Length: 444
Image (cartoon, rainbow, N blue to C red; front, top):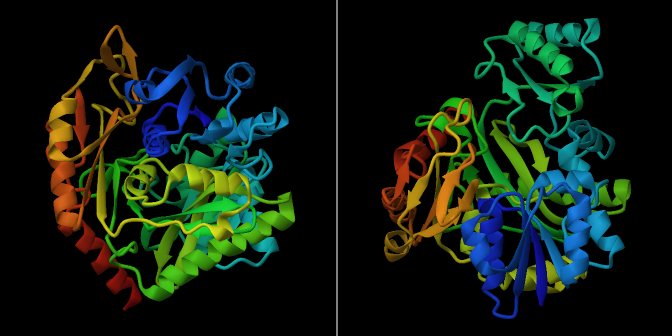
């Protein structure tokens, strides 16, 4: 079975490893930098931008794959699935229209409003900076509501700014909104939303248009530094628990999050003729229950590394069931184990990262520990590995309990040398307890 994989980060490394668990898979990868881990698993690699549809077409026509799996969001936003399907290649990923659930935040919010899906929030979209935007923020200020400023389109996870975090107050939010319009960031359209109070978590589902099969819940850590301080990053690491839910969630929270995603899949069928691929819900657990912050049209990164490391089912079977619309007949199983993923990133990341610096990874030592290694935004040249400025290497610990999984991941980081840092508190019990306490406090 020939599989075309698009993307070259740690998420795609996790996808590649999961696919290669099936010995019948021959992997062909298109990525912009040479990821050494993925390259080793591939029959052939084409180095090209993942959004270069002409390069994708050329490579696909050459290798004639039986199936394609799309890792990142940018090619989905460009319509790579539509292109592949025109070539007769079934693809795990949504069409350009359906990918708007991620690529157009206004589309997502309007979908919730139109189909009366639970878990939405107060919001308004604006095409330009002006009196209307200012007065909407002033109205929320009078109600004591802090705001979030979101460019409507894709910004690589770095365009959203929150009052109380990156922004001092609602007045500063106005200035940032003005900046977004002036710079054209994320398409130059802005969403103003109420800031939710609570604890974030993520839930993924495999979707074939009608059926959704859920994965375990995961918690990501977007802040750059320990204790949830610093800038928002693409994600510094994540954990999942052996019972597949998170310790601050009730069964009611679990069921409502799943219901919100099921309703979204139904609404997408009505609105754009269906969604297939991986749907990733980023939620905030508030005192009223789960509310959706945003959707992604693909696996989360780092969450893919947690989830695929404990997937018991054959991932190729899951992919085939997605494109053949047969998920209903497939039991998707995960091991009852804890996972902790930690990212090692260049010094200065995300605001002013070092670039082009070498990174030295002792793969043997990491393997001996029982940790899983995934290269991310690196480039292999002449046998050496260099950082590109984004997250560099991820390590995953898998064990019967979270404490052991965290120790494995933490130990593994010692075998990665260079101008790097990581968050050692991810997966530590003290940090998890903080989340539990916060929810107790919010719920009174």
